[in-house]
Structures are given as structure tokens and as C-alpha cells.
Image (cartoon, helix red, strand yellow):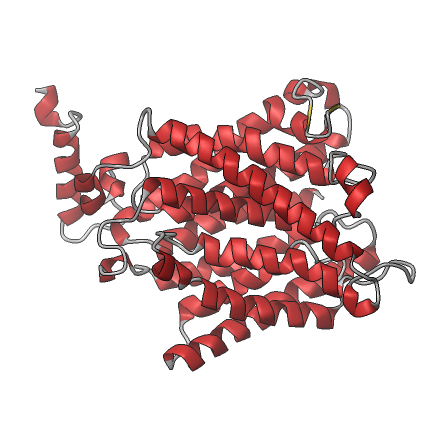
Length: 419
């Protein structure tokens, strides 16, 4: 589990590289920093009260008491500290995923306030409900009525919650200037995107297989984590070829991520052939879904909705059809298990959509209407790297340094102001 935790920890900087390559050159550092600071903030929250909220004494089945293991001092000398560290890496990458939906236009300070609030009020309750003994856990109030949800590694807790949160924030912040018209909004560094994809796929083996109870289960999870993203990549590329006439490197990378997202909830509960089919469907559906932002007019900058929300829905709901029976009983519809598993999956999805959507809206609107969540038009056009961090990702003949100095003068931190 410690090795798996290290793999998972790598996923947040891997996401930073992936997202950094997808955004504009003058916003790359800001995008990377949004992921990096998420890890730092969540690390502190997790030790103080986060882990308690996903594993502590139940508060009406909604979340664990934040005081059960506050500061983790009561776990010193216990192997449970390893579990605490492993679970922290899940929370880090989940909240970091959201940032891609608001790339190029968010205030860094506002994001730093959003992260601990969202992890505390959305992620921790969902993780407790599904994994910690809450409403959707075995014996929980909802699972007792509707059946036991299957979510081995986070289709609801991680992918759907982050996807719907990204959609809500994208709507609150509004579109980037020139959205749908400015070619400058294209990814500026596709090799970074491909590198980030490879690192994410590598880390995902810890994400999915780290909680395996037996070597046999770990083996199934491992091969499924190979199968689904491989098939999803091919499905995405085929869709691009048919629709646009050419497959793209960005499509290949996005297809891999869509397949990883889809297999996350089902990695321990579908056959390798089922994983191939699931990945292929997720790749095609997500490739089609990313274009919806232009049709419906919401600016999901880096396709968090089209990949994480949509593929998360596909992977979670597919279990109602392709979940393997346990000891010859249950399973999805394709195995003669009836509708019970599908009903349980639908209920879990609805709970996640409502909780994550509503609470994200409250947090996002509160920040937006107080300190403001979006940078000014001037700063967005100039690039948030300079306005938010006084840095540039690239130096071209002193051009970046000139912008750096100009930003310091404008914000009152340069030598001219000090003089």
C-alpha cells in the first residue's frame, strides 16, 4: 500500500504536466500550480480532520466525525497511518482534476480557498458514504434499500464528483474571452500532454490496485487497468478519424484518460473482455461528449466534463450490466443478475451529482461574490502566469522577463515602486 500511495502521489504532479501542456503557454505555470497547491492544502487538511471525516465515528451516515482522529495522534504506532496516507493521495488528485475546467481565468487565491472547503464539504462526505460506513456503504441506509453500490476506486467519489464540480465552476466563472474563436486556446505543448498521460497511467495502477485484498484480485485489477485505457484510446482515435478525418495525439491522450476513468469504479468487478468493451465505449462516448461545450455554450477549458464526468458515468453505470457475479450470485444484467445492481449504481450517481453539484455551487458563488473567482479581462489576455505568479513558463529573447517586470510594476512589487 505504501508503494501504491507513492504511485498515487505522483498522479497529482502528472496531472499538472498534463493540464499544463493543454493550456496556453502564458497560463501553463498557473495551471501547474493549481494542481501542486492542491496537494499541499489537502495534505494539511487530511492530517488535521480530513482522514477522520472519511473513517471516523458516523454522523448520521453522512460523514465521519472530524474529531475521531484529529491530527492522527491516536494512530501513532498503528498501521492505519498507511491507510491515512494512501487515502490522502486520492483526495489530492480529485480536487486537482476540477481546476482544468476553469483554466486560464481563475484567481489563484480564490482557488486556494476553494480547495479546503470542497475537500471538507464534498469529497470527505462522499468518501465516507461510499467507503467509510455511510449511507452507501454495506449496511448503510441507502444500500439496505436500493442494493449495494460498487465503486472500488472512485467512479462516484473521485470522477463524477470532480466532473460535476468542474461544470458548476465553469458556469460560475463564465467563458474565456474568445472562447470557440481564439486559436490561442489550443494546447501549447502536446509532448507535455503525452508525458502527463504516461505518468497518470503509471500512477493509476496504484490508484486502482492498491486496495486489493488478495493477489488474485490485484491481478484482475491490473490487467483491467491495461485493457480499458488501451481500448478507449483506440475508440477515441477511431471516432476522430471518422468524424474529423484524422486521429490526433491529444485524442490518444484523452482516450487513455477516459478509459482509466471508466475502469476506476469497476476495476475489480468486470472481466478483462468486459474491460475492453467498457473502455471502447468510454472512448467513443467521451470523444463525442467533449464537443458538447460548444453546443451548449459552457467553457470547460480542458474537457473535465467530457472526460471525467462522462466517462465516470459510463464506468459507474456499466456495472449494472457487466458486473461479475460473486460466488455465482448477483452480477449485472448481462450475467442474469437482474436490475438490482443497476438501481444501486443509479442511486449512487444521483447522490453524487446532487451533493457535489449543490455544495460546489454554494462554495463557488460565495467566493465569486466576495473576493471574486475570476481574474480581470486585462490579466486573462496578458496571461495568468504573470498576473498571478509574476513568472513565465518560457523565456524567448527576454520577452518573458519584460512581461515579468511589467507585472511587478502594475501590481506594485517592482523596483520602480520600491524606489
